[in-house]
Image (cartoon, rainbow, N blue to C red):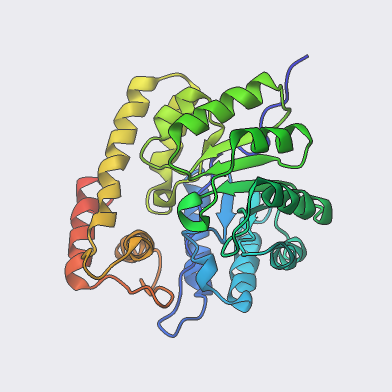
Length: 311
């Protein structure tokens, strides 16, 4: 008997949420961005993730962004909707909205702000899965929620059919490899293990990852699709060369002045500035309290785009 392939594979960019200067969702820019991702050959869309500024947006903004994304995708690839909230009831509210708006799956983190342990985290995921008719993926991002999802917990939830997959942004490469091994040993059917580390996709694919969720994929979706294809066919030399090029391009996150820019401003701000320079989105506006990159920082982003062959 052949184990079914993971349900979610390939390149699944965490789509940015373009904003107007007054903070509204820029529908036209968002449509253009999604169309560009699809034209680049991506295999799915992760809406309302960290790169989508979901924790900064109002529910109205989230609903509008997801509505535009689902409509633009038109069923051509799966749309995975982030339901990232500090408590289980709030996640369920967002999951209901995602279901109503046509998402194909939902993803959520461990609870945050409140101090929780493995028992509460397990109850959280089981409660969400029981209440939602869509497949559920776990988002492992301890730098933001201050809880690392243990391999044993994830494997158990996978075996029980609670989780359809994991999006790993933990920074724990040993844990990621152990998770891949544990899921394989447990012979879990159709379980997706996606890496969120855009600069080590080749290594994670070699280890057995199902695909990637690269924020930088907003800027260069075709590059990540080429990288994924090279990994799938076992052409690791080509994969390394493409990964090296993308890793150099990732230097755009260093364009912002670190004295006045935290991690979210550097990442989302750089990606949006790059897309503005590429003519994909109208403005590089970001949500408060983030700040947009200024002219001098945009010039540094432009330089990296030129070096990567995108301008």
